Image 1: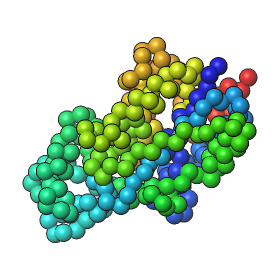
Image 2 (image 1 turned 90 degrees about the horizontal axis):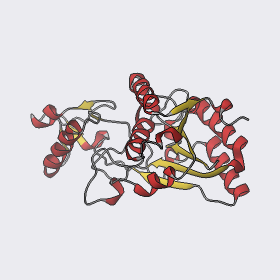
Image 3 (image 1 turned 90 degrees about the vertical axis):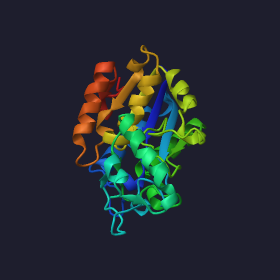
Image 4 (image 1 turned 180 degrees about the vertical axis):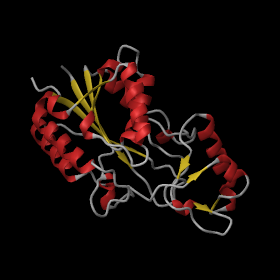
Length: 266
């Protein structure tokens, strides 16, 4: 059994501890269960891939990018629609960014992704929030030491011009920026595994989009390789319905779910 793990954005800013920029209730307990699973399976794991949400302050999904008619920035979790940008209710902080920002929200609408959501600045490069949660970080370090192998860290989200929920492609890929385009290397690597264990934060957004995109680019017989460790991933509050829909859709397509204590326990 060639087992690989894909752990999506297990970072401090998504933990439910003091100081986290975008806390996901249950994320710290999720991390502890994931760490215990990694330690239990240890050398049975052939490879581990960890994605890292990676931003800077100036970003199209952060408050500093937008101003209303009174010159005020939007509050976190504000949703900005195409109509609001078209009629000037929201505008970028630089006038010369207006057309590109308008093109972006239109592209989000047309490709069926989320309405542009303004998030608290999170997972900023060089900050505590960008780091992997301690329980998971310790387990990853232990696996590397015992296996004499390297965790495959995959950064995503550096472009200020597009959201990047999925770890394998941005919501609106930029043809001039390879980092926003489809990560074929990761998809092809995962498809060679016999089983891919999935975990991370948050279930409603980055996990859901990553897994959907992987399934869309896997061969139809490969989707059954995907196994979500269900008690190591939680949704963003208020978006639980998105997580439920993701689980229902992917189970229908062949993804399996299992609790950490039950996964490969034989």
